Amino acid sequence: QEQRRRLLDVASRFPLPSGCRFSYGTAGFRADGATMAPAVCRAGILAALRSVKLAGAAVGIVITASHNPIGDNGVKIADPDGGMMDQQWEPFADALANAPDPDALLQMVLQFVKDEGIPLGGHHTAQVLLGRDTRPTGEYLLDAALQGINAIVGAHAIDMGILTTPQLHWMVWSKNKGTKASESDYFTQLINSFRRMLELLPKDKGGYELAKKLIVDGANGIGGVKLEQMKAELSGLDIIVRNSGKEGEGILNHLCGADFVQKERVTPHGFGPEDVGVRCASLDGDADRLVYFQMSSSSDNKVDLVDGDKILSLFALFIREQLDVINNNGSQVDKSLPARLGIVQTAYANGASTQFLKGLGLEVVFTPTGVKYLHKKALEYDIGIYFEANGHGTVVFSEDFISQLESLSNDLSSQAANSQYHAAMRLMAATQLINQAVGDALSGLLLVEAILQYKRWSFQNWCELYSDLPSRQLKVKVVDRSSIVTTDAETKVSQPSSLQELIDKETANYTQGRCFVRPSGTEDVVRVYAEASTQVEADSLAKSVAHHVE
Ligand code: NG1
Ligand code: ZN
Image 1 (cartoon, rainbow, N blue to C red):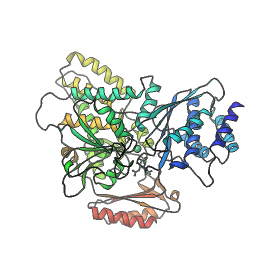
Image 2 (image 1 turned 60 degrees about the vertical axis):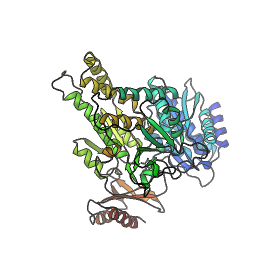
Image 3 (image 1 turned 135 degrees about the vertical axis):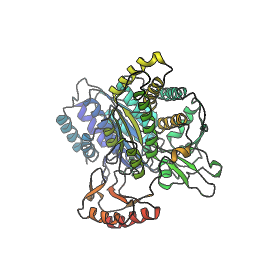
Image 4 (image 1 turned 60 degrees about the horizontal axis):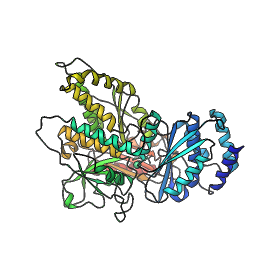
């Protein structure tokens, strides 16, 4: 009875404006921040139900619209493993968000609770951790989420404050593992494992010495704020944060941030000729994306870009190298560490990166766009490395692999001078440094920095690992984007049936041509991606295919 009353109450406090429709896409619900309260409140209900269903395991809610403009906002739910909410609950998320009135909402919840066997009303408890980014609508939406959570009897909401998206995911992950899960624990883990990585650098110096100076574009979001907090404790790095989100520095994601730099390939706001030749990184508004760039000339604002694909390649090279040292070191201790290493990409990965990785003999697999697909696939390996070209990605290690690595390190520790031991310790440090719950620009940045120092590589060395094929992305507005259905990890259109044939015909006209179209999961557009041997050709291929989509 109490439960019914609470649900009816909260639903009437957040009525759904007529004509409003929400859909739980690749990044949860996203819309104009001012219109989001009903959806966020219902996401609160949903998260609490999810926690009850999972025997009180901590679940997360993040209020953010990532790289989108400051007026937008969004909400997504993190499962107890720190990943995105199980896709099986997405249809209910949609239905709940669109329940037209309090009664409908109540009936919907009661039916779902029954179908899913959720033990509501007993002595069960639920805990939901909440985080939000720096958006002006964040606090208001946080309140809506809290009210939604509190509408479920026994649910306990814990506001973790203003955080990067990956910090909140990490907290949920850590809490459920039973390890320390506060923000200062997060910083301590990153700082300590970064220091360990540097301690494990090969001693025989020589060759290129990486400049300590790194300029980071914080997108005027939460990532810059957190990096400012952390940087004082980072030895071996001299970080300067621009677009840090401080008063007067600029607007969130406006002409800055990882999305802007990756798509436009120009310097973000606040960078100029004095930065030529300096290694720079760019985060997105909630710090779950990372790209690197460098200006090579002061005559224009174009940059050399290192995108997610090249970050992935760097990580893959490093990890493979450590495994090789451990496994192929015949002259030393006869210990081995069998590991299935998998690389996960999407169709947006630059073709040159895929070719490069396959050329190294690595196993490369593809999933549809969206972290939930990539992450899940990566978990199938002992070591799974995934990245989207836009800079979102991470490395995940199986529990089995980590325990083997631990016992190997113990076995080798009596021979602390040998290279096998060092390689094992480097891998251990990497498992601590990288955020295994989700892509994390801050932890990714530290791993990149440590690996560049380890390899004694300059930004240029890294950038020249392979040359990206010229590419072009276009957005096409259509009446109903869901009329386009794709298959084969979004590389082929299955509906409308004639479209793929047209795309194939256009693509055949270009050397190294590759093109695909898919409906966006976060914007009301169809995206067209084209690649070819020259920029002019890539542009022209994208344009001609876009015409067929219109
Ligand atoms: P959509 O709008 O579905 O293309 C975009 C990005 C994804 C992912 C999500 C979530 C591109 C082409 N797509 O998805 O990679 O990051 O946003 O933020 O960059
Ligand atoms: Zn983001």
